[in-house]
Amino acid sequence: QVQLVESGGGLVQPGGSLRLSCAASGRIARIDTLGWYRQAPGNQRELVATITTGGNTNIADSVKGRFTISRDTTKNTVYLQMNSLKPEETAVYYCNAIRVVFGVSVDYWGQGTQVTVSS
Image 1 (spheres, helix red, strand yellow):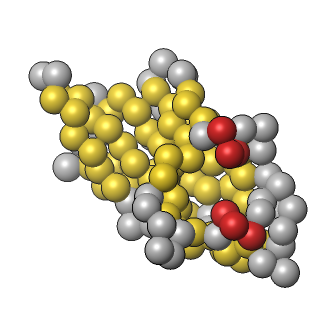
Image 2: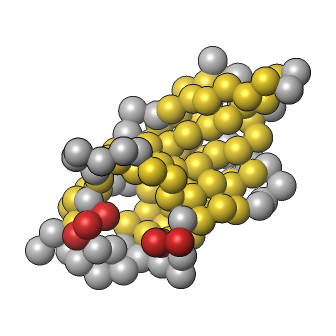
């Protein structure tokens, strides 16, 4: 199993910044991709950004130029730097890990961290 613990959420004013962190523990070997998703009330969970062990990133168009994903392999941690936040980005942000074993991908999720963008 893989455990993911998120931190860094909170209340921020529109236009402000937050940095989310997600620390992975447990069976961290063979984790290929780490990423962030978010879910607002009444909406489906949506991809925000992912990063592979090779450093390849996939960023949602809606956050390109404002959000940056990075990964510290020595700390088994993935970060999401969020700038110029908008009220509509209020959501629970979830950390995701994809572990690949013998060609089979397994998803793991954190418990989520609330981000509220409001004046």
